[in-house]
Amino acid sequence: MFRILPLLLLLSSPLSVFSQQSEKPLHVENRKDPAPFGPLHFRNDSITIKGIYKNYRHAPGNLFKVTFMDWISSKIVHHTAPIDPAGRFTLTLPLLAETDMAIDDSRFKERTIAIPGETIYFEADLKDASFRYSGANARLHNELHQFSREYGKRNAPPYTYSEWFKQFNTLPVLRDTMRNALRDNLRYLSTWQQQHRPEPRTMQYLRATMIYETAMPLTQYLYFKEKAALSPEEEAIHFRFLDSIIALNGNSGHLSENFIIVHRDFRNYSNGKARTLNLDKDSIYQTRIHHPREKEITEIWFAARYLKEGSTLKDNQLAELRTKVQDTVLLNNLIRRNNALNALLSDDQMLASTRFYGQFPDLKTPEDIFAHITTPYRGKVIYLDLWGTWCSPCLEMMQYMPGIKKEYADKDVVFLYLAIKSPEAAWQKTIREYKMTGPAVVHYRLPDDMQDAFEKKYRTTGYPSYFLIDRNGKLISASAPWPRDPAALHAAINKLL
Image (tube, rainbow, N blue to C red; front, top):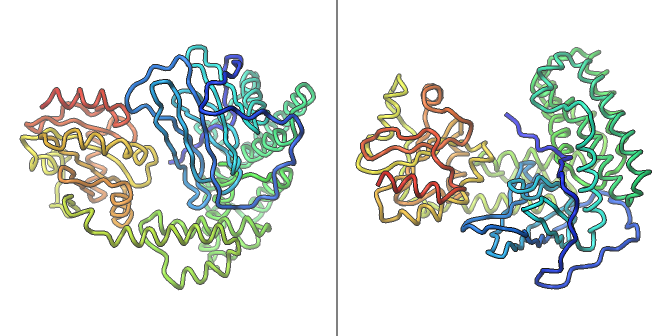
């Protein structure tokens, strides 16, 4: 399963006038046109986001969140900051390059570009849904915001990832559809440019976004539908078309989520094709991707897979990577993560009080499985988390658990984690990384056939799924409150104590 965050999102209300409520005076935006983005380069830098929500109702645990793709691992990452009772927050996070960023999608569906070294200020009104940026790059951010509102009002056919495979059952039909969609989008963008005269960076960003929004369904179709099944003639046609689209972009100077997906799909498809033809795994990819920076980035992504799966890179692997990647920022960041994982995996003390179960008797029915994993904890309330190492929302919820576990440290509550489709190395690594530990914590990793049987019987929602089981071992809820709603979760648990 894959997750696509929409890049052009709509806010329906007019912009508010930005107030001066802040810890320090806000920057005045520069009306001169800054230099365009590019060429793309990586550096060790950061970005700070400061904001205030007007008409904000405070609740403990309320968080501001930003989401973007991590350019070392090519995975979606989240960063959060607490919101104080006045509705203010500050978040500083590392940023290696100009990057697409989704801002606080639990309250506003806003997307903009994050620029290393900048401070973004914004004010949002939760009563009338107004939103406005301030700061050195305010013009750029406000123009992107304005475009997203106006773009969303078009009477254009929506093409979402859930519809691609339903409506476009052949690759030529999908290509024609996406070609027409890109043509219409670029025409709209040209008209919008004439009407609003935005700065060049705004047009550069929007154009690149549209181009990669067109290319991404075409590479995803290959990855999920065709794998390596195209004939040589069909493959040549398809990749010529993809090349013609991407060539329109030139040097966008920033990394979009869809940029990552397109090039990751390129490499996955190429490697699969090479295996089918009994060739070296990188042979086809090396002829298909021409830009040295794109090759370096994908080398980093695929090396980072080892870390994601819970394995560290050996000396010979690092030596080979150094011959392929000349960008020291990318390379050194990956090596630091590799060293950190080595240290994490060697720290057994953090697991001393946590119980693990990876071996099971041959249980045939879901009822037997349920009884086996819950019976040892009769007399206690069980909060069961059905999760996976591959599941981003599952991992996001882990940040809320330390406070919840602390609340029930001296009470009869057990936190039971049931991992699904999670290899043992990734399982062990993720438990350590997210500190899913403690004397009241229990981990199970079922065999595949038992996982399927358990899910078929008990899972009624997606991932993660949360269950509450009473002191007698009775399933009370298969859709218990999520950790991000601690008040509701506390009330549900306390009712059973």
